Length: 346
Ligand code: PMV
Image (cartoon, rainbow, N blue to C red; front, side):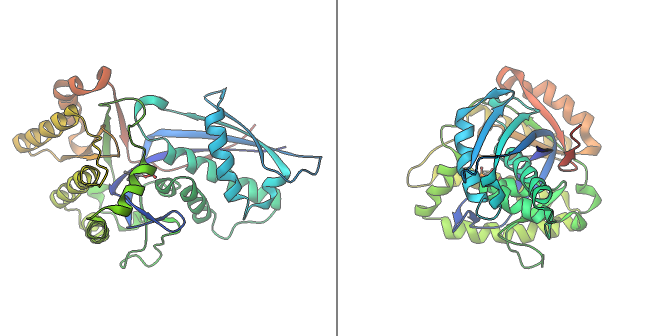
């Protein structure tokens, strides 16, 4: 039996991926950073099947319990991976996965989950075939992307770019690349306090959201603006200009939700408390000049991003003024994370 375990983070996008083309390729480029505290740990045990059945077979356990819904999704995913990793037909996979954050907290887990899974599959591939992958992390990012687009940005720590953009020669639509060499010290140690406005499953999934862009009257304009924002953000991250960073990241978050509200079948994922938190953040920033801003995922929760030098002030602000808007007072503190790591199996 060959066993592998990887722990991998979730990430938060600063320029958002919203809209797909072709085989799970992004309609525009995006940039995110990896989180240090929202992690998935996945172990895969691969057992050689003596009987020569050329079929994918898996057992999937989430938080130590058999989970047939996830199992079916991963089965479909592995059918795609097996086109390249043909050994998958000859092994039974037992997969154990767990998160450091509650599944129903409203924190997206598909990025960390597919990143950890793809990393395990790449390690198994190398061990089972005795062939080293030409570029391990790019291959893992490629396969993570096939599972969930944003997952491709989770196979590295720090800041990551997905999609082709003129100023980064190595950039690609097929996989994400790390851009930490382009980051000013001002942006190296940010905090992300995730304020849980709403736990549980979203009314509209991100797959449905991406699909709605196909018919969206603003789609092409959005893709153009997002691609320009990627270039702008790269130059801001390089220069260290926090004010421009604030304006661009907040505008990206609001544009994502404006797209939802203006699609032919419209939907709204923000809640009154999301807007109340945003108002509070703006007031606090105006009054104190603290370096803090918000971004939003495809959901109601708010990511409060702040510079490390103001951390104490920001944590006090969260406790005094924002907790009341969080469901059951729930929030999670993160910093920029170092990325995935392989855990040695005893
Ligand atoms: O990876 P998906 O298909 O769940 O889409 C993620 C979309 C956003 O989180 C809204 C933006 C992003 O770039 O992560």
